[in-house]
Image (cartoon, rainbow over all chains, first blue to last red; front, side, top):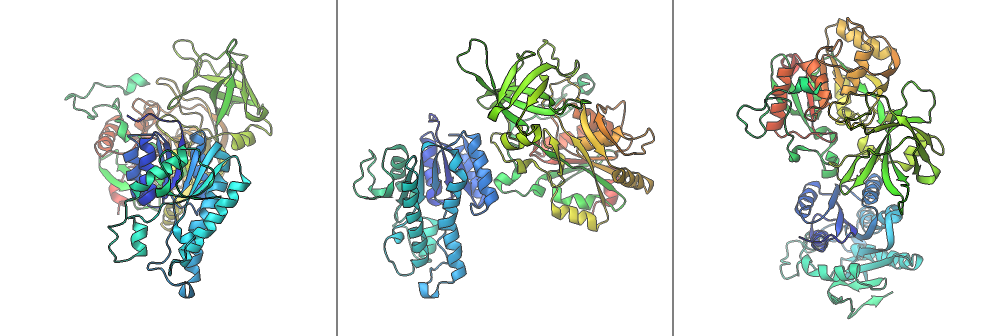
Length: 242
Length: 385
C-alpha cells in the first residue's frame, strides 16, 4: 500500500496519454489527485482505477469553460489546497496539420484557446488554492522552439505558453513554474500529427514520468526542462533554465 | 415511528432481500458525487416508476417524466434554493493548546422567532472522512467563525428534537453575529453541507435545482435536481401545470427516531388554485419531493382543498394521518428506517413500498441526494406512452 504524502496535484487532460501516465505515476507515489478531462467515460475509468491507490477526485469537463474551472477550485478547497497544477490538456489542431499559409484562422483560435488561454485561466482560477511553494507545470513541446514545417499553429501556441510561463515565474517568486517538454511519445495526439503512420517506435508516455516527478518533488529552479534529460536525483544534465 | 416500519427479517435470509423497509443499503448503491462529475446529464439519472395500486414497476430515466404525466395533472415543485449552510468554526477548550476546528451547520432561523440572528445550528466534529455530531457543547459556549463572525450557544433547541437518549445535545439555538447578516455571510464564507458519503466538496450550483429562486434550504431539496429545461418544456407543451411552493429544509442529519423539526414554508394562492383545479378535473397532484408533500398537506383542509398560507410547519405525515391532497410523489431513495419512509407509506402503502424498494435494490438504483429517483404514481398504465 502506498503511503499518502499529503500532497495534492491537479492534472488536466488526465484521461489518456501523458496526463494518464502522470496520474498513475503520482498516485503510486502517494499524491492525492484532482483529475479532469473532457472524456467523461474514460476519466471515470481512470478515477476508479486510481481510487484504490490514493484519494482521487475527478470532474469531467472542459477547462475552457469558466464554470468548470470554478468547480475545480472548489474541489481544490475541499483538498485544503494544491501543491501542484499540471496543465497537460492541449490540442494539436487540425489533422493533418496545415501549413501556416493555409491554416484556417478559426481553427488556430481554437488551438490558442486550448493551449495558451486555458492553462493561464486554470492558474488564475486556482491561484488562491495554491499552497506556499506550489509547483506549476505547463506541458510544452520542442515545436515551441524549433521550426518544423506544418507545426506552425501548434508550435506557435506552445511558444506563447512558454513565454507566459517564463513571465509567470518572474512575477511570482513564491511558486515554481516549469515548462516541460516531454519529447515524442506514443500517444493519440502524436498519432494525429502523423495520421496513418506507424509511431510504434516512439517511447510510451510512462517513460517520461520520472522526469516530471523530479520536477515536482525536487528543488529545481523555475525554467524550461526536457523530461528525458532530467536526472532522477534532480541533477539537470541539459536545460535552458530561465 | 421506527417500530411501525420494522417488520421481520427476510425469511430466506438472502442478501439484499427486502422483506421489510429495514434493509441494509449496500455501499455501492450510495451516490457519492453529482452525476455531472462523471459526465452524466442531470436528467439521465434513473427513474423507477411504480404504481401503488397495481404494483407495476417500470425502469426509466428522469427525462421520461413527461411521458408519465397527463394534461390533467399538476406537478408541484419546491422553489427553495440551497444555501452554503456549512461554516468553519473554532472552539476554544479550556486548557487546550489550540482551538479546535469544527463545522457549524445552519439549519434554520429559530422557528416563530422574529430575531433574524437566532438560528438553529448543529455542531459537527471533523473526522478523516467528513464530520460527525459534536455532542459535548455547553450553553453559553462561543464558537468563533471566519472574518469576525461568532455563534453563542443559547440553549438546546426544543425539548423533543434535540435531546438524545444519553442527554447530549445535537441541535442548539444560537445567537449569530455575522458581518453583513447571516445569509450574506453564509453565501460568502460557507459551503454546502455534505456527509461522509460525498467525498468531495462540490460547488453550490451542483446543489441547486432549476426551480430554485428563494434561498433558505440547509440541504438541497433533491427530488427536483434531475429536472432540466428540456423536461419542463415538454411538460408544458403537454399541458401539465407546474406550480411552485417554498419550503426551506433544515439539516437532514436526523438520528433514528427523531421526529422532523419545524420548517418554513409558503404556498401561494396561484399554487393552491392550480392544485384545487387539478383535483376538480380528476388530475393527479404530483409532489416533487417530500418537502412539497409537507407544505401541501400543511395547508390542506380535511377534504383536501388547499388555501394559501405561509409560516412554519411541524406537520409529520404518518400512515395514520394519511395524505389528503397528494396523489403521487417523486422522491429519492430513502435510508432504511428514515422518517421519510413513513410519509411514503402514507401515500403508497406499506406493501407497495416493499415491492418498489425490492425492485430498486435488485436493479441497483443509487441512493441519496445525487442518486436516482422514484415516482410513486397511480394510474401509471393509463398515461404511460
